[in-house]
Image 1 (cartoon, rainbow, N blue to C red):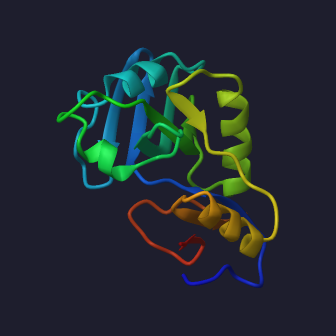
Image 2 (cartoon, rainbow, N blue to C red):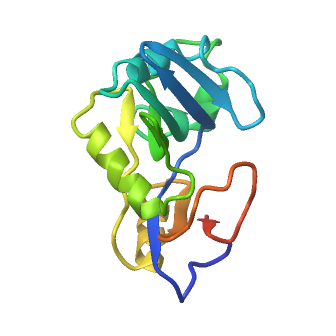
Length: 175
C-alpha cells in the first residue's frame, strides 16, 4: 500500500530484503523451504544449524533469509550473488511462529504468536534474529526507514490469523 492505515490496531516491523522462508524443525532435523516450495536447506546451512539449536523440539517458523552488507543492512543483491564472491553474513529474521511443540498456532492472533516467538527466541545468537515490533507513528517509522536506506515496513493487524498461501489486507507492505 502507499500509506499506513488510519484505523485498526496495527503492529509494525521492518520489511527485509531477502528470501521468505519457512523453517520446519523436528529435533535436530531442519528444513528451510521458500514460499514456492524451493528447498533452501543446503544453500543456507548456517541458518538450518541455527534453527536446529533453538530451545524447542518441534516448531514451524516464518521469516526472511537475508545477506548483510558492511553496515549490517539486508541486501538482496548480496543474497543473489552468494556463490560469486566472499560469502557475506547471512541471518534469518524470524517474524512468526506457526507451531510450537504440539500446538498449531495458525488460528491464533499474530499478537499471541509473536509473544510466544519473542519468548522462544530471547537471547538466541546469530544467525537467528527475532524481528521485533517497532513502536510509533507509522509515518515517522517509514521516514526513519527511508533515512536509513531500508526497504520499508510491514503492518499486521494485531488480531489477524495466519492464512497460508493467501494475501489479505491484514498484512500490508509500505515501501
